[in-house]
Length: 463
Image (cartoon, rainbow, N blue to C red):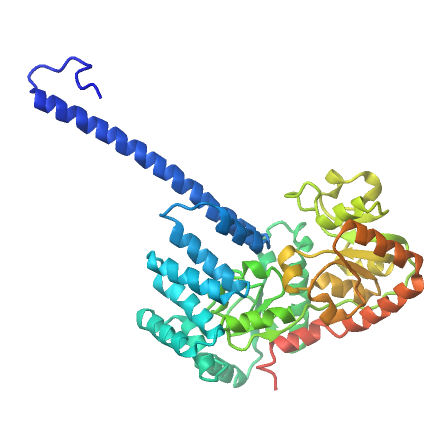
């Protein structure tokens, strides 16, 4: 570094000039270092955002793989370890979850958060005493920690919070009709034309109709009971209301802390109940999807149909449609945006009215079905399958762990376009076999009505 490159100003000593130049060089170095660190942190934050996005898309295994393989800065290492701890526990590996939680704590991550993951892991691993000690230590630091309280209640053999029992007792004594509010992700849709495209919208409409028939008042104003769909962060959830959640899709985006705010947790997947129990939720209940459809008599008009909007984030719009194309099937698709992606011969239309779905499903020899990746993995079966079968239709679906427990062999499943081609050809050529499975599936679907669903949701309040 040449300190005498420029002519020094008059009146300053050599020492002052050297110190001034050193100060400027040091300042420039700090700026450069700060920019480099910010760039590194920016890249790491992008990594965490990518992980968050993958989870929201139902691709938690890919998120976990990225966290395991991508290099990580020291500054964000505790955050990555914390994410891994939560994901390992979610995917049933309590030992790895425990190890990551311990490391995250050693690096200064939030105590209550990681101590709770440790406690859950120890409980699953059979170390109840150690788990209880950690839970008590959490409550010393955060006396209102719902998770710690719930798990300790379970370890004492209890299944209901005292405050929930008080709510139920108060509501049972009411001498007026109870007021219920149903909150759905579709509530955020401001375009009336787009609202019917939300599957959640129709679930809400049908349940509200059943609650009204049961004598409740459906209103957003001053409710006694609030029913939330999915378990996404609610805008408001008053402490005095009896709060219920029905998680019937997208399990990867469940926020464990948000879920703890509910008095009653219901879940649509039989295999997901043990996972909720491992998290220490109090008495989660199985409540599969359901239908309002009834058998419709008509002659088949179409061979193969798929009903669902294209996802513009994918170049093929949707995996099941790409599979039909790859299999060389002759099919029709109804849904938004397909006119941009498909040749005209495959395009049936933008929208098929919900109240006329029976006509389409019963008038089609084979209706295709798909699920989001996390739903398929965890066994969440969509309402669409119930609607198709109850209408008198026949379904071939992408593989889903929850189909057989509900419908036995009446819904054939596939994993590759080759398998789809073989199944479609077989059932088009063998109408007797198709008819036998259709009738079997219809009988199973009709056991799951919105009335029964509404009664199950309010079972703790009914006489």
